[in-house]
Length: 489
Ligand code: AMP
Ligand code: ZN
Image 1 (cartoon, rainbow, N blue to C red):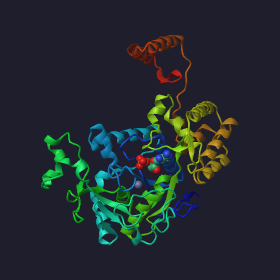
Image 2 (cartoon, protein in one colour):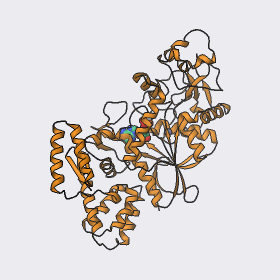
Image 3 (cartoon, rainbow, N blue to C red):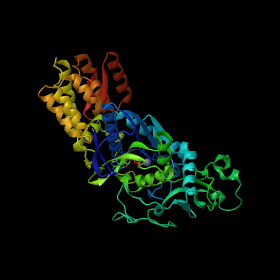
Image 4 (tube, protein in one colour):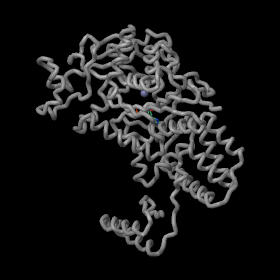
């Protein structure tokens, strides 16, 4: 029996799929204006473990992940600048280039961390039609109002707003600050925003508003002017915006529109980081249930806790963030980072430090050595109790730290077979089926290695590369890390 902590009921519950052994899973994806940091990646590793545990329990999964490439504003609520537009302006690129670049970087991270890919990746900008349809339906139901900057959802019109985060009567979380603008109630949120005034449309601040001029970015003469690049014409609204009905979707509406499109009006599981609980997920529920009229929209909500650094939250908007590339540049493998994460339960905060990562790396190296020894030994199949215990632990709200402890015990007393280890690794995803064996290095190769080390000291990269090729021709492969060169067969 699989048990999961459901944020919606604040209880550990037995998981029962809506339909037999089929699971619809939606995970909020990255906002692609910058690299994902290792805190973001903690959330994706937790979701990957959840998915692998479901697969281990023989569920068929349809997993959808969005890419937020429009609508996420700098204050994380309804005001400020679009994060992508801002990044584009700062770098003199266009918002589409920024989105493509960071989407690719994110997908590389996913692959490096051995995270199983979603079945469907969906971009907010590819689903504007679906979002407009949803906003229109909420307008038709009388649940919205219009201000000079957008169309807002009136959260007082539904009776259970805030049930996920237990918010009551428009009260705010301690310390929360809400910019009201023309909003009627603190919790109301934007479904659609009109394009900004003047700043990003300098060429439009006076004069007429011809359709052709609404997209001056497409004419060469204005190629270098700053402008809003992501905007669409809406069929609704009184066109109060200075630029008619040109605008863009609010941040939350994309997740409702795309999850409903791909997973239906009701589905099984929705996940994200804990910071999404009071606003983003709360608003997703409000608009989705108002739209479909069916409750609950999602049966199980799971949230991963934060990765901290120096005891503060790691955030893209702060300067405290570390990327997976930095980890790799320092000579750690992405799987060492994955192993570091697996040692802590997903609902506990976790503090990152380089020392802790180093310890995880050493732990994983040792684990690999023991797994290789097991592979070479003729061990009997593991006791059935070991397999049962593993299943019991992972099914107990994803208790991976204890499942790892079980693996260690089995390796130490040699009671676990290689076959069982590979089977458990379907959940752990530590690459146990592909451990590179360190090899005995023949003196010829060692001599080349020494020559190459010297070339590298002298920063003679050409020579270093030539020697690498020579070594590779001899059937060996080289990996460079902080600790020097490593040879694998
Ligand atoms: P974003 O790209 O900002 O939309 O965030 C992507 C995911 O990372 C979301 O599920 C967030 O909840 C999650 N997240 C953000 N910061 C952290 C953190 N420090 N630790 C863990 N997850 C985080
Ligand atoms: Zn979302």
